[in-house]
Image (cartoon, rainbow, N blue to C red; front, side):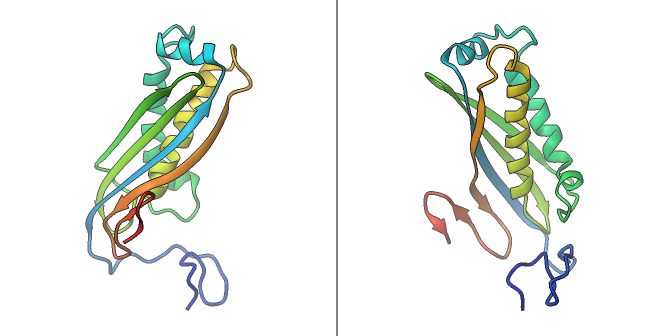
Length: 161
């Protein structure tokens, strides 16, 4: 059996059949960072960016992206998400940490939805601030933890269960 679940034994791509899995509560937390000039972070924190409140626009973009992940990632299942939360943590002098928490009661996990939310929120920060800082960069987008499902819990700090 192929350990890569999105390929069959012959190597062809496939969407994993989750029909026999029991629905469970599943949660995924992902994070990422946007690095920028110190003055750009100051503008964001002080809500002085001319395009508007960067935190709230990026939050809405991240939520929308999580809800549409299956349209962006070819083999992801469409999910009726229970909740999507985004947090923004300024890391002076020159970075912003974005954390997304996604929850669903379903047959498959929400890791990709959390990672997509962080990615699109970060891209939105870039879009809103590029007029003052084109050197911004996104990075360290990663799964922090997940719970639920047959593969058990995972925490970046502790490793697999």
